[in-house]
Image (cartoon, rainbow, N blue to C red; front, side, top):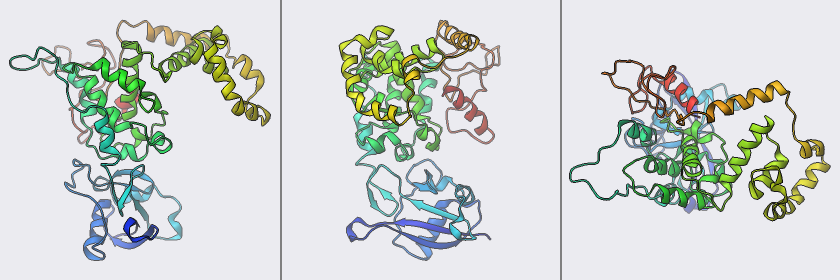
Length: 400
């Protein structure tokens, strides 16, 4: 039986003492879970170790912790899997597993964090319930199959808080609504039974800590144990707000994204010097002459001048942008022409729809035309079962 060195981060705010590492040697199989090791220590060595746990089946989301720096469910992470994340060995021949509480939330004791103070407060912020359309039908709402499949991915969330723990935006701006809550928001924005789609999107767009506060770091996608891909849901909210509802927000988020896309289409690469004035002054070369763009440029000088003096920014590139070979630029333009020339926007969710009775056995991806070649295999609207994980991961990467 292998022996693991389990290092638990211990902290009791009421004690007045600083946090410390509590080390224990644990003999368990590598296929045992990290939670098994923690409970073994609590049962046999120190009953004061604080951790939440309930189902031990990766459903309740209670046992979210960080294991060797990565958040996840302790009951769903094998000891050897967690040990493999650590490469230095800490000078010990035994595999080392450091377990600490999740980030971006106050610690109540040891591995227990205050979910009410952050996670559930953010969930309440997005109005996490359906607002009925009027008139209410006598029996039930009839919802298209594809419409419900579209929100199934967000419904898979178990509210474990792993994405919140690793969100870099929340680390810098604690006011950010966060990946879990915004994923929850898409669950209702994407539901045709909800009556307040526009109001929800307008509210989240106008909030300075809302849709456009996400920095696209992908940490929440990597952290989520259920494949919800919160960042992807945030991007879908943005497309619905900006492209579908044409909401021009006071945070300038939609104009910024439009300017970004146009510059890549025109230059093949991002022209950073044009991005800021176009975002504030208008999506054209003349945007820099708009008074709003001038004010923002003046505010940016204290950061721009030192960057130029230290050689971090090339004045030539800043003035004229990067140059691509004509053939390469034309190839980029062809991509934009093909994507924007489609009659219907294609968004591949983690789950896809299809019926056993279809004459064509090829399933239909959410948002794609029926019978389109290359659509991924049909999946159950639950967490991937045996043999489905790799295929689901492929579908998720396509959606990103």
